[in-house]
Length: 338
Ligand code: 13P
Ligand code: SF4
Image (cartoon, rainbow, N blue to C red; front, side, top):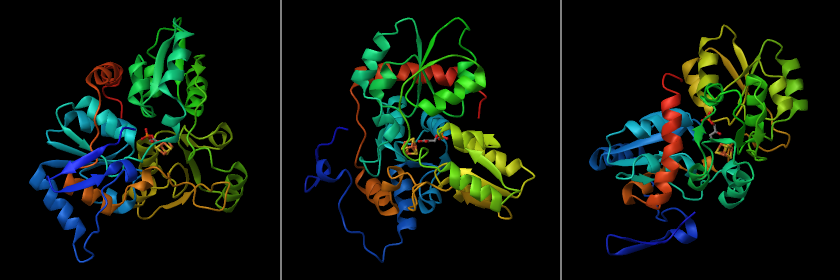
């Protein structure tokens, strides 16, 4: 992640290289919600937030969504500034789609274990060893990996995209082994899969999930396809964050055990105040169903990011152009999918 010494206003310097976010004390008397609203209007900024952000950030966002919804919003916005409350690859995707807009991320350290599990140079070798394969990469990857891919997908449209590949065309899928395995099972298509994973979705405990099901026999288990196979086997529904949210809204059931980052529960509880949502238990005693990368963003950092328009996402133009093509292919191949 490129970080550099940045000048602000000719007077102050923020060494983002050391911290990755703006260091400034926030006046405790400040109405931070009101101030963020004021700055959004003054600067013509739009605040996009992923479902995994903490509830207070979701509550001030102009749009809350999954990776596909947020990419579509980023592609469609007229705002001059995109403040992305999510992780680095998401803000980077917004920049790939919007070279002329300023894209800012509250904390540059907000990475992704899945993206980290697939370094672009190793992926280039992998791809070279399988030149006849079409490369489908999950959006949770760096611009470098996107630039080496033919089609980008998200958990919302992955199955839809795989089904459009001619049956005799070999497929290479990266970087999530769990999503890859689930897609193979759903579509019956063999695929060569990169061995990467998400630290959050791999922490759920099958043993504890079975125990929870016994305590709540009427509860349905809803799981994200980034979860491991043993968890997915217990799921009544497998889908992206937006699909999980929609399923709970439309279901007749009243209790749900949810196996994904627990930030999604905020919108689910708002959608259905009468229903009971239980986060799936991680193997350890700590609250590991929170993504440590997503949770680096705080309300204070969102405010300071907007105030100083830092840290900013920048990309080399040749890399951006190469990474844009597979994202545009995804958009074209998944119109109408939500
Ligand atoms: P979706 O937003 O596609 O549901 O993916 C979840 C995720 O892990 C994002 O990092
Ligand atoms: Fe990456 Fe997993 Fe966090 Fe999503 S939840 S941003 S895949 S580490």
